[in-house]
Length: 436
Image (cartoon, rainbow, N blue to C red; front, side):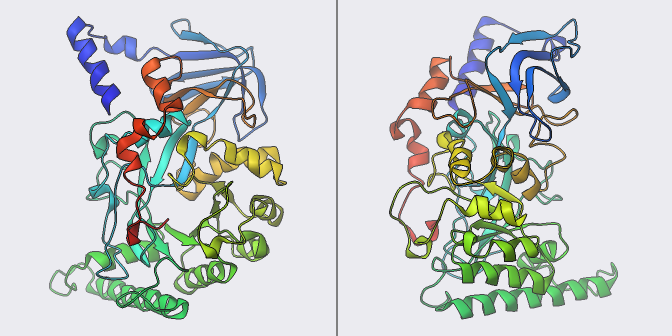
């Protein structure tokens, strides 16, 4: 990330060694309308952050530490950083078409942490992303949960601390049109479902062998990376993020999850409005996308922006995502506005940009709302979150400002064309595995 190195070089050149104590000073934001998401908006609010965490949220009488750096944000709006449950920034890729299922492939091994797409996300107020492989396969690989920090390597972005011991993301699965094709791809929808079921049956058998071995190395089956990943799914430690569009495909995804005891997060669900009650009854979350221009694939022909309202009415957990670059990360916030226009309530639409997505990633204890003890991920807006005239003024991740529209170097990422994002633009291609 170019800005990271430029800033570091400037500090080094000027000899500006910042004392640790200064870095730990609290920051207080006073005068804005706060949208905590987990509670009602607060007029003339106060937000205090320290050490990367939120330490106080409240009205004008909230105590501000005497050593705090005070920011007057009167007339502005502050809400949690946006959570994008489905993105392709970072230039990564997943499995290839040598097989239909690649559960052992990790996109974290292919992400470029210095890709300009991360700056684009910051400019849009996104602070957490689920970076996915494409959907050209039934299983295209493991996703990665990232904080949109300024970073040099993938380790600077990952939410997990140890990639060898921790589950650092979910598993991307897909059905419908994208993963169909000539062998070894499934030729039909029915064959696609059968191939997935067969693989999960093998994973159940592998898990049984491991359990029966009881830690005896001589009895353990040979290590199988694909089976290990699927066992994590079966045991509830890895979330399946399931690309699906048509109503019949949505129900197939739910049915597979029920058979093998996992609850997928449904992605896109273009025809969710047709089966919202069934999605809610299955207690399956739905991450939806807003498409505001004609064109695209036939299976999304009956897409409707009313899906968010239908899911809310049915009682299903609902979030929005970008599928960047299908929706440009810089314009993510307008998804909530479209949702409200089509019938969603204002609170649920804003929750769908933040806390709902955090829940789908299993990160609701850290992100998604302005609550004491959570990560200090938040954005400063120039006005109402649902107004077309509103801009993201600042983006803060863990108490550090990573985007400032008043800074010319940052501003270009907010208003520039695709020439600013040469690396990100290269991800938009026509290769078969790159289907969204």
